[in-house]
Structure formats: structure tokens, C-alpha cells
Amino acid sequence: MKFSELNLPDKIMASLGKMGFEEMTPIQEATYPIIAAGQDLCALAETGSGKTAACAIPLIQKVDTTQNTIQGLVIVPTRELCLQYVTEIQSIGGKTDLAPFAIYGGFSREIQTAKLKHGVHILVATPGRLIDLLYEGIVDLSNVKCAILDEADELLQEGFFSDIKLLLSCIIHEHQTILFSATMADDIKKLAHDCLRDPQHISLIKKRAAPVSIEHCFFYLHPKNKQAELARFIEEEKIRQAIIFCNARHLVDKLFRTLRGSVKNVDFIHAGLRQEKRTSIIRKFRKKEIHYLIATDVAGRGLDFSHVSHVINWDFPGGGEQYTHRTGRAGRMGRKGKAFTFVTKHDLPAFTEVIKKKNISPIWVSKDPFQNEKLHDQSHSSSPKKKKRSFHRFKKKQ
Image 1 (cartoon, rainbow, N blue to C red):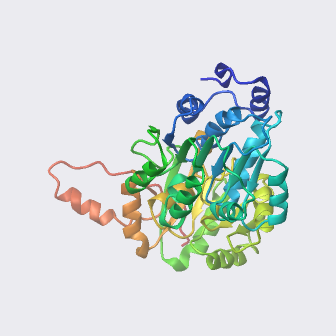
Image 2: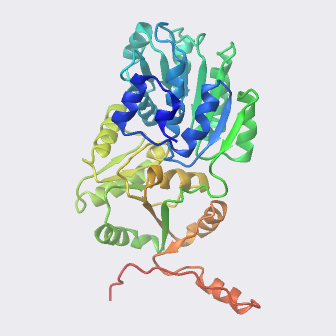
């Protein structure tokens, strides 16, 4: 379905045309009539499927720009996603009188306060800073028509859930609530129901939560060989742009110090950096001034990097949802991408759980550590099973 079939205002259509938006993605087509009708919604779709625009477009239409009040509230878990979201809203509503704004920690409270007093129609916020400004009486949610929780599975986890309940309780009048996410476990779905009123449910994930456009490659090795194999992979692969994920800040710092002497256009990001620095790095990465970005999971949720062709898991992710969000930075909007993950002996139990839970067909670019088990299973089977093809793409040094 085309956006031109929605009878959108001319100014919004002009902006969408400038952004290159013609065909709606499946999640946009499925959710637009529900959001436009004012119904509560819980929507699940693969990362990179266009969820931000799916709720931003109808949200912008709901705003009466003659009223100088906050009418749309978007809550997200990270500062980077906050900035990305408000940028998308600004692009779509740029030809209208819409006034969107983002508030988050690590940025001048005085500047944010001044902007809020001047007037905001759509507020995008992280929970902590929003609660602070609510307590100070600077933010007024009494005119909110629609509240959106993006990356809702993260927002409804134990660390955020009490904040979200508090924030939604501040909107005491009847309003629309929308939950968007790429993943949501069954127990989190139950919690989500506390925030919704007679919601519609849409899931375009089905049985496969990992984006189908991504090739999932794994390399089994001893930890001490990681550096050599990473260097070989970077040298032999045709990489447009890559994110290299580590599980902790100090590991990011250490890997950056190791790579910066041999790899061009490499930088790093984690929550220990000043917000201005983090924003600058994200901006440079999007402009392709940075080729390789070493990161913690601060770069693993919701962020849209359209040029990323490869995701490299230097450290194995902590679970299936983390794997899905990390690898979803490649293969955005159906484009082809590759996830390359190092697996050590210590990681094998977690690896087995992830590929089973996420229905992933692994491609081993090293020796398959489970090969002996498979051969044993086949020898005891009444009918021989077809072996999975193994790709050995790296030449071993003699």
C-alpha cells in the first residue's frame, strides 16, 4: 500500500516524498488504521521494519498545532533513541507548525525547561528526566491524547516498570496508549496489559524473531585468538559499515585501544561518555565518517543505521533478546546484512539457547563444535539425516 492512498495532508505527503517514503512497510500498513482510530495497540515487528514512522505519522495528524500544549508523549529507554525519534518526527512534520522536542538526562536542564515553557506539541523523553521535570511542575501532561512506549519490552522490565506506571498514572484523563517493540516475552505481555485499555494486538514476528534478511555466522575459537580472527574477518569481508559489540565499557575501551592502530575510521561509544560526545559519534557514524563502531548495548536498541552491513559480536550476547536487538542494526528495512559472532567454549550453552529460542539456522565459518554430536546422532538414527552445509571462508595459516 502506498502512503498516497491514506489521504494524508499535503504538507506531510511532501515531507514523506522528500524522505523517499512511497510504499508502506507491513507494520505501517497494519497499524495505521488502528492508531488513527484512537484504539490502544500492542504491536510487535522486526527491528528495522519502520516502527518509528508507523506511529509518528498518525501521531502528528492528531496534534492541533493551534493549541500550545503537549498532546503526544513518546517514552523511550535510551538517549540515542530519544534523539532519533524526535528527528524522525521533525522530518515528517517539518512543513507543518508542529513543535516536537526531546528531553533526556545528560543535557542542560535549563535549555530543556526553556523550550518546554515556550511550547511543545510532541514530547519524546527518557523516563528519568521526564519524572524529574514532572515533579518540578515543568511538564504538564493534562492534554496528552496519545502516549507511546517504544522498545516497550525494555521499558516494562523491572528497572523501568515502576517509572512507566508512575508516568502513565499522571495522565489521568482518557487517552490512547500504544506499545511498540521488536521483542516481548510472555511475562512482559502480561505486564503490558496493565497499561492498555481493550487493545488491538498485532505481531509480524511470528516464530522468527531474528530479522530474516540477516545471515547469521558463528566462529568457534579460543578467546586468545579473537583478535587475529577479527583482523582477518575485517580484511577479507566486504564491509560497508560495522558495529562491534562488547559486553562492558572496559572491554569496549580495551578493544578500541587494540584496533585503532591497525583499523582506519574506528571509534567507540558507551554510557560512560558525555552525552555531547555520544551524540557526535552517532552523527559521524550515520554520515559514514566512522567505518567501525565499537559499542556496548547502548547502540543495540532501536537505532537506525542505514549503512550498517555487518554486526560483529566480539562478546556473546547475554540472551536471545539482546542478540536480536544487536543483530537488528544490520539488515534494516529488509536490506541484506550479516551478523558475525565469536563463540567460545564458555558460550556454548548460551549459544544453544539463543539459536533454539530465535529459530536461527547458524552458519559456522569455523569448525562446528557440535559436529561430533551430530555424527553420533546420525549413526543412531534409523534414517540418515542430511548434513547442514558448513562454510569455511577463512584460510588457515599453515
